Length: 150
Image 1: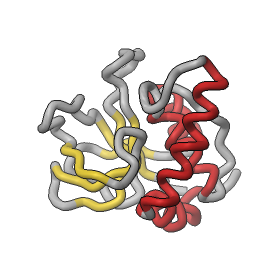
Image 2: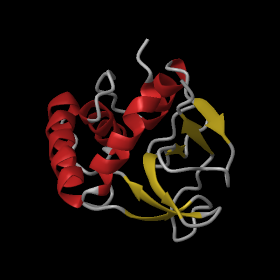
Image 3: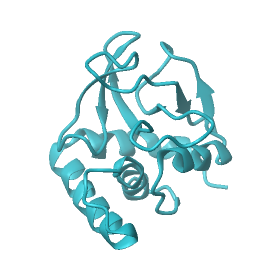
Image 4: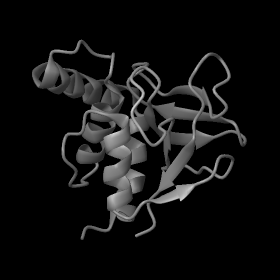
């Protein structure tokens, strides 16, 4: 199996560059439209992160739901990390055990400012932006983080 940890610095570099993040979002938008006709950015978080992971060199399938992508990463050996312990390169998830359309979200942590506030990359803005793990600002609270450990 591929050692995912060696790809994390490149993943963070790609997602931190607004031009490269926007390019990945355009690829994700086209794939999402082809997959189920959905108009990006709605429902685009998982495919956006899938594209970023692929561009960093990780061999992951196109995945279209946050819950499914979290499970893919867990199957690859990524470990659950509790809130407040997140680090650069971790993946944040708002998912529970079952899918909740409109509430489920998955994103990449690019910088940790404190236990709650981070800079992240996802489908919601065409550049890295702030997000609170607590959900402050009207977002769904993050339930856990995933960290590559292999």
